[in-house]
Image 1 (cartoon, rainbow, N blue to C red):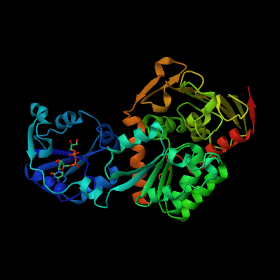
Image 2 (cartoon, rainbow, N blue to C red):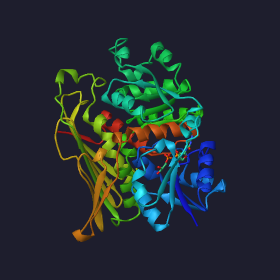
Image 3 (cartoon, rainbow, N blue to C red):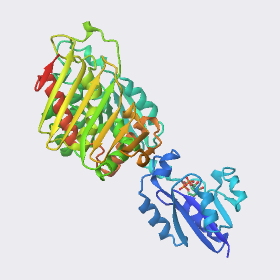
Length: 449
Ligand code: C2G
């Protein structure tokens, strides 16, 4: 009996795939089809897969061509499979010519002519590229623009600079201003916007975008006031628009896996979360008076540091204390801020600063062990699970491409297509982060040093 094996993602299974499977089957008597696991695809840079592994397996099964279906999970697995299943022929489409010649050592390699004129990428793109406009002048805009090229089905269709607003009225804080007609004409041709302007501008810019039926991806904090944040989510629901919180850390595989480990009890009962984020910057005092012009420590780093606290311990803390080192009597620019939270059976602390330098680590402690994420933990691909007995320690590594931003863009696009937000960052966490910003600016529970 001649055994044949072939592999693929089979996203939106199409004629090109079935033709390949038919010819693969015809090469022998028994066909094994390897369907790629999500993590495997992500690792090889294929991040735009829309269907789940089970959907893709079912699609292959429904062709009736596969005698056996297996899952491809790791690099090098093809060699293992060929040996394990006693394969005679490995086959794949001609787009891979030469790439799998190394398998000749184990079996015969056949490249079959690829079917021209059809691909999953084209099927995905058929609905037309999503036109996204970028709002703001921060470095996040440059990174987003760069990363968007890795996501198909996305087109950057406009830029809106914050300085265009400042010129209009420099005396009124931007959160009290309507973004203006220039902003409206910028929005008109777009499907969606990515907002990374100063947080004091977010509310007005998001509101206007939603009222014009545009989907919004916005860097946290979504607003500096909790009620405004709630209102924005309400408008998004009414208008059937996606309002998604952007924070690249939430989309990094290592970070989301460590949350799962903690939630599945690997460190026992969770007792404390301690997160530090700093980046030392020269601060010009004269420019800090108008708080809406510069990113202070709490806006720059607060959302990142608060994320693991709220995601692991929830947002119903019993008390908190904010200690802030502010630069002048307007109390708007903090050199650093520390927040201590008390929960019924746990504690948490965050330390954020643009005027101090510290170890940017994340430590999550439990009754049986702890998780240690080395600096800079907010863009990590690595963490350790540590126990009293070091022999039981475990290390975890997950490839991180583009600091997580490209996965964030993929989630946004998929949320729009499916008309449903898969909440990497839940609404109530987004709201709680705005609540902390509000307390900072209104001086609630704040002690100044
Ligand atoms: N294919 C084809 N004609 C097309 C599109 C795809 O013949 N128009 C073939 C591909 O060459 C491949 C199979 O269909 O042999 C599955 O294609 P994909 O789902 O795109 O999977 P791919 O990324 O090519 O993965 O380990 C994975 C394998 O290396 C192949």
